[in-house]
Amino acid sequence: MNLEPLATFTVRLDPILDLGDSQWGRRRFVAITGGSFDGARLSGEVLAGGGDWQVVHADGSITVDTRYTLRTHDGAHLYISTSGVRHGPPEVLRRIADGEIVDPSEYYFRLFCRFETGDRRYQWLNRTLAVASAARTADAVKYDAYTLT
Image (cartoon, rainbow, N blue to C red; front, side):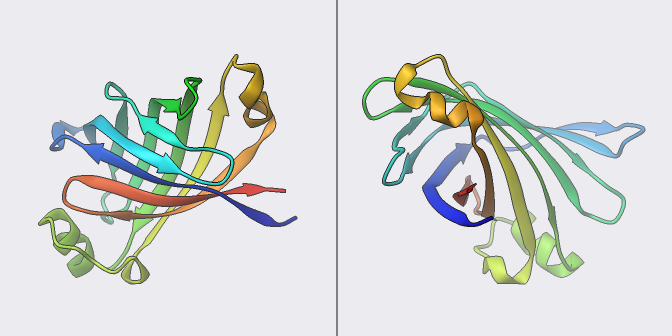
């Protein structure tokens, strides 16, 4: 098994909507407002309207659960869902929450990516699994996705 670069994603975000504590942890929603992605086989824009239904756990770690739509440079529409985790030392997580730019080497933020489309040109994505290494900024998540070959 190898990793092959797929694309670099920038996903712009609205401010966090805190839904309060649940039996799983503190539930939050973050609306996706747009963005872009660029790679040798996959490029285009992130469409507004998706979101991240995340849970913040007692130890400060976050379970990520996103769903959103992509439009490729040539007009295809793709559904993407990601699931993952973000964790790190409390002081680093606090700096991220305060909107600081924090070097991604100071915390762990990894994603598993699945795609779905009916567009024949991109049906290879329906059978492709991808993983990503991510970083959080004040108003976006940026990640490099790699297909598992």
